[in-house]
Image (tube, rainbow, N blue to C red; front, side, top):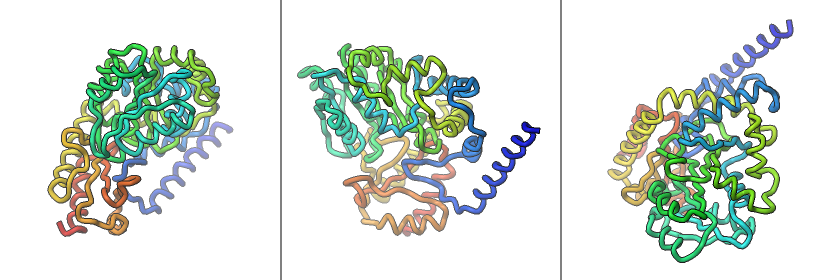
Length: 380
């Protein structure tokens, strides 16, 4: 009887979920995050909650992690954190920089700038290579800095979400590899599962991301890989804190658990989305992102201008120069009536740019509809 009652309760929750969904006017998200989430992925979040120290959770954890290792292209542990990616950025500051040593931050926009500030707020000495927003950091800049000084780590934002720039990660990684005592830490927040990343082959020591971008899962969970080299470094760092201690993450990872009670519902959703990603295949997913990016950038350059440096424009989002001085809030009000929303510029680029996301569970037909709507609204 108890099992039957549980089954009926579960089905009733699903019915109420779909009833609620049907009564809400959903606006399709063409913003850089959170991104669109499939109904079947949302449905996974209504799964009955299980104990975070149970065998059922360990099975869910291990299955999810095994799939994530394929996404990251790594054999290293991939940890699940009940935080945003910002928390894992702080974890890098706490775990990878030894006392009296420096970190090299490659700054090219709002989020790479924020990462540099996180290191400083944690008492680490940060030296920054800064380029104009919209420009990419080049490998020769990194080489020059590493030749002049010694650093415990180089921090790179792969895909700068504020500017729409994708930095040349593979080429920069080759330079960092020449300095064996220097770790490479990568923010892949808006690139993981949308742009190719090969953690082991390229020698990335920490690769971190949120799930609400190209992975297309509701926010509340971050994922990150940590190399053996980075774990060894953590053991050499004092005062790593508690919540973001890499070695504690490893201890629980080896048990098939998270360090504390994790966002179990999000993990169910992530596991489902990873099945969808792997069924599509990473290669096909990357090609789809390239196709959508090409269409948006063609439209942007015809009517405005792509803000990103030529040759380094992102495959997951486009930051568009607002050359016509559009009121983005007003545009979104009109788009909202058509069930869509785009994003204003971020930080100091607000109103000077606007952003169109083409990542995750957005498809070419969606982009075609969006651009058609924008053309009609803007009389283009």
